[in-house]
Length: 340
Image (cartoon, rainbow, N blue to C red):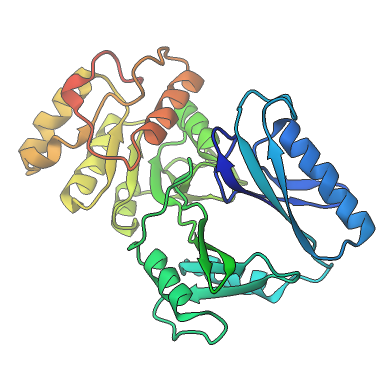
């Protein structure tokens, strides 16, 4: 396992990103380019030599030495694992499957690194100094200031305690819940682009044979005769993207979302004319004006123009990522056609 740490200046990725290297493959990335290529060569040499100690640190300059234009410098941390899955990995995987946040604490200067998982409200462990345990609890509950990576996940925090260097990293990749209504031409393209992005997608349609039988790991499909009823089943704070084959169904879905009120973001495909009509109709159906202001329509990032399904989908996906944490959008600033 190769971990990027101690960034000085520009670097291709954030501190804390990891890459797992085997004799014949690699998983994850520390940023690509010559840095990643050299790291893979080093890792495979360590595997062939059954290297002892089992971990080491190595500095890399990203300028003349590697002929990369970033201009910064990083230190890579290399670890060699046997063929057996370490117990801490099994425990970590179990916590993440159950959506339990935890902090991975690791002493990085020892020949065999000590790792400990710190969960919520757990008693202090004798394996960790009290100062370190408190720092892990602070990080777990958001009291510590930790920079975020581009995907929204916390990066490594480093502390020196009792003469040793320690890493702390909050391990809670909880993708934001997103409900996508509609599996037409645009919906298919939107779903394709949401693969691999930090969303847990529920993809809903009422029509038979439009939802694919196989979807990405971060998606599940729901074929139902009553798509609007799926709003009640969604998680609190969800993002909603509404683009069904029927304006009447779009309206019913938007009404349920606006009535519920605890959504993070609601985007509706359509034009400014469609939005005006929906606002008028939804007002007549009892939706308050302050809630209607939160209805984003047209959707899509300004500047990405075109009505082709793939272009519209790119615009919508870019908007979701640019506006994270998906704060309220000023619809009055939008103009043009929102891609029906």
